Image (cartoon, rainbow, N blue to C red; front, side, top):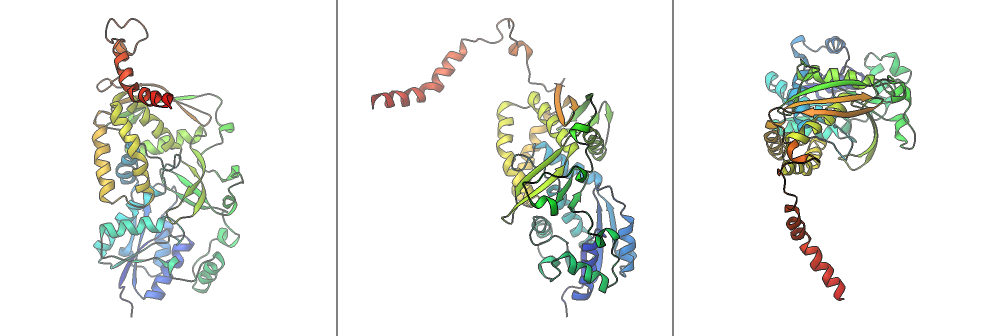
Length: 408
């Protein structure tokens, strides 16, 4: 008899997690609690409730939670304070959603008295690592069921056959082959993997993209926007104050309209393989550009450079599932401490796939001093003769090395 009495399943209501729900009931004979997260993926989530009810899930064991504000406020914004980019390009749209899902899975497990959690991540991907590292960090004794590492339903045909055998509804798109891509969406991004994209030499089809027009089809005139910052976070657009989720939603709309935020990359997965994926992150692309612009006038030079040195490590921690680790939390405290002066506004021009900074100011925290930086008469604010001694001291080791070479 199974030791698992109750399990919380991260449940989308799609084919894979519907099969998992039935498989858990049959294999473990346990009670299943379903959890569906609204992270701004833009899909109707009520069908997930109806499907869960058909499987005999109790109404009070079905959780459908709107996590959009928490997602942006407590995960996306803190990540962007660090100007986080993985391997020089990826804005971590999928990665940053996983620690929140893991957190809520554990909260529901505690609330319902469940002794296990389950997810639909495959054994080849990064998400299994992110979900499970998060779960263990928040509840060390939790049991985790990862069906893709246990069952033999390792192909689409086997999944469909299992679904038909057990009366699991199969949408027509699955019968006809469905989308050629595996997709993940939330308020920060939408990702595409698989099928056509598994050949990295082939260009992504234009019909694949959902959030952005192509730069060629974008308007023939630029659009100017002004973003207001408070302690490193965007709090207003064109003078209108907005909540974190509303900020990102509006920036996605603006960026998508102007063909901003498309990305095609081959990334190095945690499990060791290379994987080609395409991403749309219009709002995040604008946020990153604007944040660096406001930091350029409000951060001390060495603080800014130190942040840039720490960022790749911070990005790797998020990508590899260590959001809840002590080292990420330590880095976050350092990053957040640097943001107390990151206040002001940035003006941007959006045009055919480009985000162009065309103004920035901070009335209270700007370190830019026109009287020193001017190319005109600075009236003694800067003594140019001081540079000579600085240069000679820094050149000393170079001169010593050159003299040694010349002797040989």
